[in-house]
Length: 294
View 1 (cartoon, helix red, strand yellow):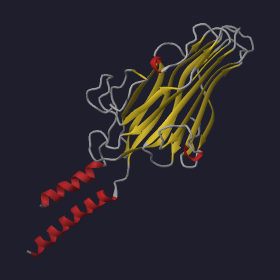
View 2 (cartoon, rainbow, N blue to C red):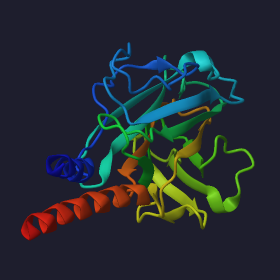
View 3 (cartoon, rainbow, N blue to C red):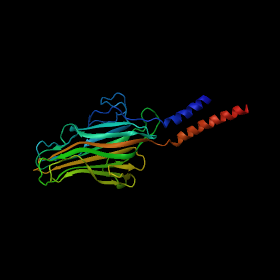
């Protein structure tokens, strides 16, 4: 009996020290696929373990006007893949980054007056039963971040404005951003703009705007992300990009990747967990008291 109670205490205490994560996720998958299979050991995309699922993936109404070789985004020509690592921090399971990218070089404008825009929508969900330890409750918390990658290059200076804009909108504890209440919504906006006064290449995104609803959290100092005030189980995300090219400067606008990062944490043990631990300790105390009386 005593050994059983000691083992029970060890199991409860050990639970707080085990961290899940994601590894080996370097390959791409087509956006139309369902990502609830993440976390299994027989994945064909190279993932051996994941602590999040990506579902409801799809490209919304996309347009690509004028310009030669301009192709609108679709489910078939847009990819999503995940990267991440284990965490050594107590309570933090790890950070997983969802990367959205074209499967071919289509988020690019090279000629004429042209515009390319599309909303990329998906839902990220926490796997409540954390990997490697059944019964551990995991939730999304910490920082939700946005990191786009792209560039604008000019071969002539004509004084025109060339722009790549990205707006990320997300809604906490929701399966869609449509109709999201302002209190549950977060928005981050980043942009590269060149006015065409010199021949140059610019690959630095400037973060222009960040808004966080009262139930969401607060924007970080650089407006590159939003720190959640609490834990959530799912987040609906919509990343809308717009490339706007003015003709006459030999401009090349290229957006190569949109990265959204999410952190997952151990939630504080439920009352039943504390009750279990308390019962085990009380049982050990009773056994010791009885031994002394004997």
